[in-house]
Amino acid sequence: MATNEPVDILDFIPVLLEIIPEDQESLRKTLIKYKGDKWNQAPELRVGLLWGEVKNILQNHVLPIDADWKTKLVASFNSQGRSS
Image (cartoon, rainbow, N blue to C red; front, side, top):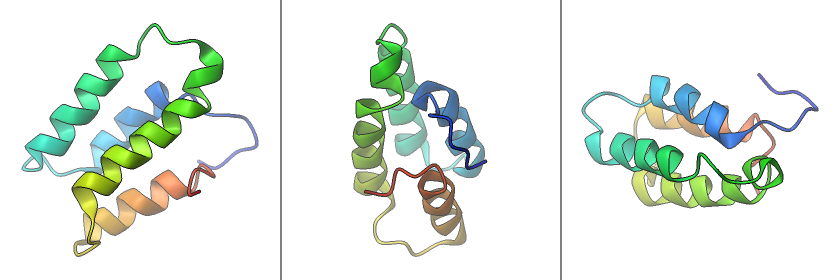
C-alpha cells in the first residue's frame, strides 16, 4: 500500500483495525474514538501531524512486539513512510 502520495490517517485507521484482533478492545476503541474526534481536521494535518499522534497510540498499546499481529501492524504502519 506504500505510495508516494500522502495518505490520510483517517482513511488508514480502518486498515489498522483490520489487523488488530477483536480481543484488543482498548486499542481498537482508542483508534475508533481518535478517528471520530479528528474527522474535521484540515487535510494537511491528516496527512502529516496526525500520523505522529497515531504512532504514539500504537506505541502505548503494542510494545513490546510479542505477537504476529503486532509485527504486521507495525509493518503496515511503517510501509506508509511514517516510521520516524
